[in-house]
Image 1 (tube, protein in one colour):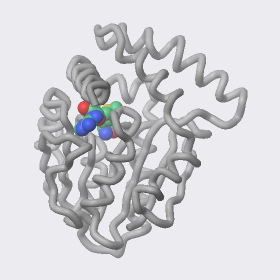
Image 2 (cartoon, helix red, strand yellow):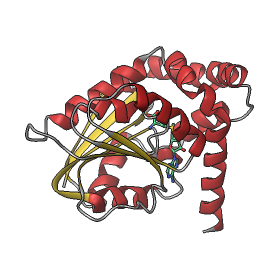
Image 3 (cartoon, protein in one colour):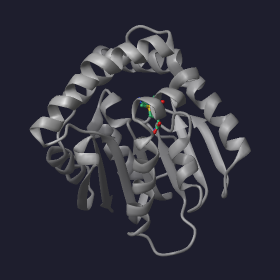
Image 4 (cartoon, protein in one colour):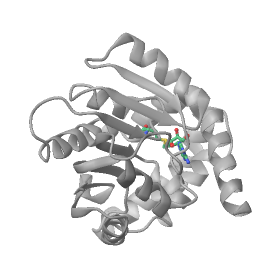
Length: 234
Ligand SMILES: C[S@@+](CC[C@H](N)C(=O)[O-])C[C@H]1O[C@@H](n2cnc3c(N)ncnc32)[C@H](O)[C@@H]1O
């Protein structure tokens, strides 16, 4: 328990320290692929929903890029436990959105929403940061109505061994140095490759999502497996 609380505090502090440079670094270090992955998430989730307006929750919304990407589908509630990330997100959503986006401080492990109150729950690059991934998935399941859709986006490791080698070289040798240099903070961009290496592969994530009570879990490897997108229904 103390270990879990310690991880939460560490993660929150880390994102607080880099919040001001997070968006720039996200787009720069992923060569803008992150935008394409978020759009892929919107498309795959939308395929499972009837047309019309949906109520969406973006768990660990950070600076609200995924909330913005989903705001064409209906009102979005973005929640995150790091206030500096939310503040940057709030500036962005005040400028452009289609349906309303509300951002609030909340812990992904104890979401402040009634059960079965959303049509869609999405979360990008968050799961591997949680001190209890199963609890995070159970919370998203709890707040989704029957027939609701889950969309999870995160980093993976490419399956092709040559690409995996290049990717590991970039992730372990280049990205931490660039990240530390640009963010001006030592540490967070060294944590990223470690957290990705210890993150379960797509097949195992699929099983975890099923164990949390979802059905029809499908996954797609994006950009050769650099990112993985999982979609499931309730
Ligand atoms: C890598 S960022 C991703 C942000 C955003 N989803 C995106 O796509 O850019 C991870 C975010 O998850 C948030 N986070 C991590 N653990 C959390 C928790 N237990 N509850 C709420 N937010 C959490 C962090 O504060 C951070 O903003």
